[in-house]
Structures are given as C-alpha cells and as structure tokens.
Length: 123
Length: 300
Image (cartoon, rainbow over all chains, first blue to last red; front, top):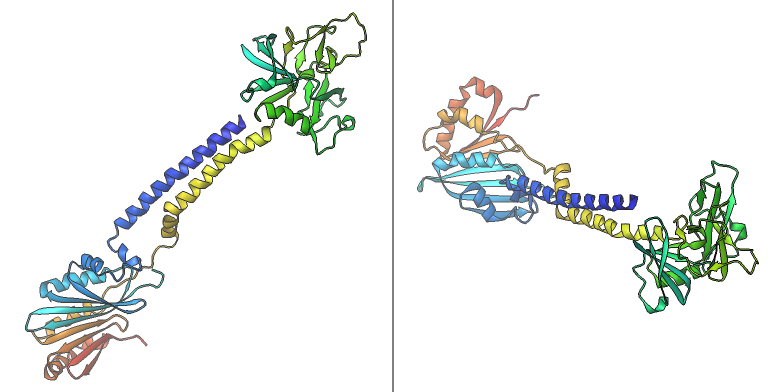
C-alpha cells in the first residue's frame, strides 16, 4: 500500500515537474518575445545589424569599437525622423548610451546620427 | 478459487485449489522442473526447506523489531547465511512463532519461482481442526497444536496413527512468510526515482534554468534619457535657422555641443545666451571657435 502510494506520488510529481517545465518555457518565451530589445541581451546579436535596423526601422551601420563598445551610424535621416529616432535611442534599456552626434548635411537636407553605446560584459 | 502450490522436495510439487474458507483441495502432483513456475505468487514449502519454533513471551507489550531473530540461540546457521521470516504473534494462544532457513536453501526455491513469490513455511501456516491429525511434511511428520496455534514435529511413535501424505482438506491460514519485500520495494521505486530525476534534469535544462536566471538575475537596465535635450529645447529659439551644422550630446559629461557653421554665428549666439541670467546661473557655457559647449553646473 505504502509502496503503491509512493510510486503514485513519485510519478505524479515527475509529471508535475514536466508540465511545470513546459509552462515555465512558455512563461520565459512570453517575457522574451514581448521584449523588442531582447536581442541586445545576446552577445552575438548585439552587433547584428538587422536586429538594430528592425528596432530603429531605419538603415544603419554598426562598428564594434571594443569588446563592449559599439557605434551605430544612422545615415540620411530626414529632419522629421530625427525626433522619433532620438526617442528610440532614449528607450534603449540593456545598453548604456554615451554619445549622440547629430550632423546636418545642408545640401541633402538630411542628418547623420552617430551613437556610441556600451553593452554590459556579461551579455 | 485460488491456486496454491506446495513444494515438498526439489522433485515434488503439489497443486491445490484454495476455497474461500481457506480449505485446500489437492488437484495434481507434478515435477517442479517440468513446468514454468515464475508466475506463482504464493508457495507453501515443506519442513524440508525451513526450521521454525514457537515461544511464549511474558511481556505482553513486547514488539520485536523487523529482522529480529527470536530463536538465534537455536539456529545452526551463520548470521550471514541466515534468513528469518517475520515474527508472528498468535493473539488467541499468546505464542510467538518464527521460521528461519539458510540463504542457500531459500535460493534454490527462488530459482524455481520468481523473486516476488511469497514463501510460506507450512508448519506455521497450516491449521487443523484437531490436535490428533498428522501429516507428512518432507522428512518430518507434523501435527498441529491448539495450545500454540502452530504445528510442530510429531514425537508420536504410535505406529497406528494415520499420517496424511498431502494437505487435502487442511486449512491454509497465512501468517508467517519469507519474501524479498525490501529488494522488491527498492526495485519498484528505482524506476519512478529515475523518472523523477529525469524530469528534473530535463525541466532544468529545458526551461527552469533560464526562467530562474531571468527572475533571480534580471538583466541590467539603463536610464538613457538625453540629459542635454531639455536644455537644447530651452535655447532653440535663440539659434538662428540653418546656423547649426551639428549637435553632440555627451551623456557622461551631461553636455550639449552646438557646432555652428561659422565662428561669427557662434559668437552672436554666445552674446544672446549670456544675456539670459537664468541660463547663465545653471549652465556652464564655453566657446571654442565655432562650437559652443553647454553643460550643467555642478553644485559646489
């Protein structure tokens, strides 16, 4: 009797752990998917140009200055797009914003934005 | 109607039907080597395979611990080779009974049947209606004692006594047995434990580790508000249209650098802002050629 109850309890516990494992995965995915800056937590993705382009919805270039410092260059930014891009820059959560340079091109009537960011080393 | 098997010797096995009243009815006699006996759940063994004894213990509160050998002084086997049954107390007679045998002897029985078979020494599990009934149990003839509630080896030398050759008509009352319960319990719990361990390892690697890390060590977040932006907004009216070629926000120094198209425009802008006493009070203004650096004054 005790043995049967023990086996039953162990099996139920194991099944519960399995279910909790799957539930926990869903919970984790939910947190990560809802975060549009999740890529900046992954060391390989932090220099992924496409990820940053998706974030800024603008063409850009990325240069890795050192192990944890990157430079993002946003070219041909129309004057009406400067404010939204500055807002997006201020919303960056997982990297430290150091320098933002707005350089105007009088002939083309566009701006170039150069951003320097530091990412934490444990990412 | 259940089947009950009785092993008398390595060559002799009897098959009984056990009715609801516990009465045994002999069905057949077979050679144990000729059939597969692995499915047998209950097996009676004759005195050929076990020893036993009964005793009275004055202390009525006595409760032996599991594996206690009540008759250790009577056993000729080494403790290492000795296998004892559970001690059984007959409440009606007040007698304790226990069977023992050698590991080797019991192994020969368990080789015939499965490890899960419960083995009953018949001297302690067969009940007769009277004291005068004798039966042959392997090499000994036994008779049931109403005084003890168990059977003992008959000392009756009366040649006229009838000794039953089988247990046909006798009653089976299970009390004392040998079983590999501990090992079985361990083996039956082994796989559930492995399953539990597997589920823990799988769940940890699959998701728990990431979730726990996320909850216990959330990623460092930064406040990236451009500190110079509000300042720029307050002075933007003083900057002539098309006068700037660039703006730099330095977060570390909390400064805004305005790069003018020429030194003259920068000079004119400087004159304008220096007239603003409120601005001068809170903001440090520096001019280097065509650039003007505005930074927050640090309180001394």
